[in-house]
Length: 152
Image (cartoon, rainbow, N blue to C red; front, top):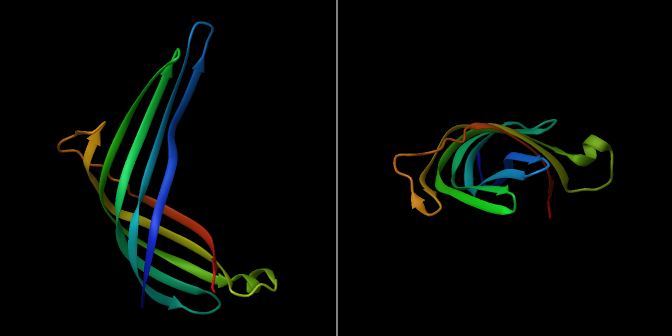
């Protein structure tokens, strides 16, 4: 059994469009971002040949979405913000890198992470600082991760 604490940062371009013709040009870009602290309870399922952990937990996230539109030199933008909880289940596998690639660097490990956000509710939605009542977002979905761990 164990506990893991993370800080998640997810950012992506949701929509990007550009159109140019002889008399006008326009473009739209929508960027979404989700960040916040998360914590998980871990259960060690396997220790050899790799460490495999099952985990469940959740976090409190802050959401923002910025939409920028340009048309013939005129730019408009709007921002949507909110915050709320999410619940996550998944697993991770950790294996020493020297065992994988036969190299001589000690204290390095490769981590693969897979999971699913089973429930999320992002509320307190504001559009350009104006509260949007009775509205919330769900951000459920698959999470895949790959990383390198160095032990001091």
